[in-house]
Image 1 (tube, rainbow, N blue to C red):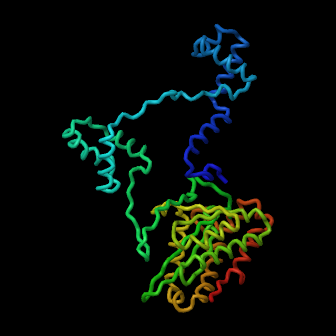
Image 2: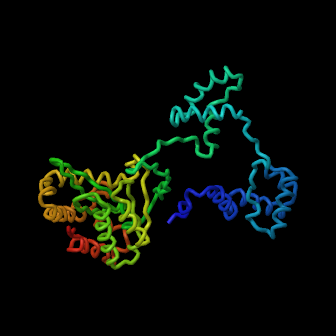
Image 3: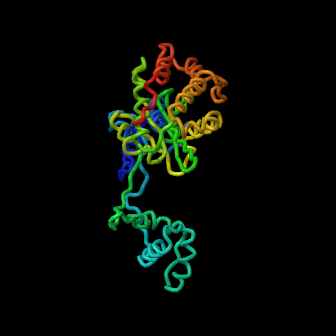
Length: 367
């Protein structure tokens, strides 16, 4: 688990993190300075100044710092070069107030357009014309970033409080082992005003996939499907399979009871950014395959006999996971890929998990 995202949203944490990294990490610059000091002790001052492009004053300063810190290599790390007294912005208060008024009148307008609106106004009021970059800094330095959102009214006519929820977003270049990350999504089908949903789950590493049809996208239904997945993985021979993560979009079906179950089980829940389906690309591609190869041919059963639909889809999923070759897996099926590339498969934990999902435990029961 990457600890960089544990304290996301806390003011000042990113600066504190950089300072800690620099303090604890032995950088390449520190190693080079140590090498120069060792060369100086062995060959003397003249040879060192001739071999390395540094001054005599710098060399003795490094030596003094190194000896004062009991020859600790970390003391040779470069220090911050930021000035102790930083320049403060000199933007007139009248311009800052005008930017706020324009951002409120034209909600969240950008700095480039603000520049062209401010230019004639500054000329009329004998004020200096600031650049686009300065306008951007003024907006960024504001407490609320000069953002204005419309108020929302509840059913009783009261103004809803504005809350900003910080979600644990999917890290860039996230790499996990097989069966340790499950991407989930839902497919919606509409017929004669009726809606039915299919919840899909896939492991982006091995492409092992599962799907269950549910009557609505209420979080209680998606939570039941997730509970079946957790139960199936926890019954495997390898206990490490329990420690996995969930990746989902920001749909309501993955909140409330679904998210509460993840927190109860002690799992990690990653969220994609809004309007960013590429962050869950493997699941989106599986949704297309599932619809083109199965759902389009049995759509009537989805609305008339959802239990029979799930039985037929389970048979198709067995072939998808064990028989059908995948281009992304060098024309191997997901199970063949696991057997070839995962050492844990020698303990037959993969077969155990597949068996659990194919028996009655994955069968969805409705009230």
